[in-house]
Length: 100
Image (cartoon, rainbow, N blue to C red):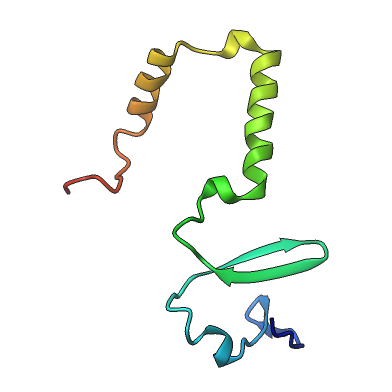
């Protein structure tokens, strides 16, 4: 692993850095993922395996839904009814399998 130091500079209303050409020339992508915490920023190539489920916040989100469901079981719906509602909500949303 190569470690370098770069200075931040203003770019419009944002802060930016220049990445060395050698770092990105063989990535064969125009998308990168940035992972950040208060102490670090990690820049990495986006993979086909990167989905919402790989986001660390997703597990917290799912856990919160489970806790809420246990606290308020009266809000839960029959699965068949829930699917009907979902189909109605998503009827105009295109998805990858569409023939259009």
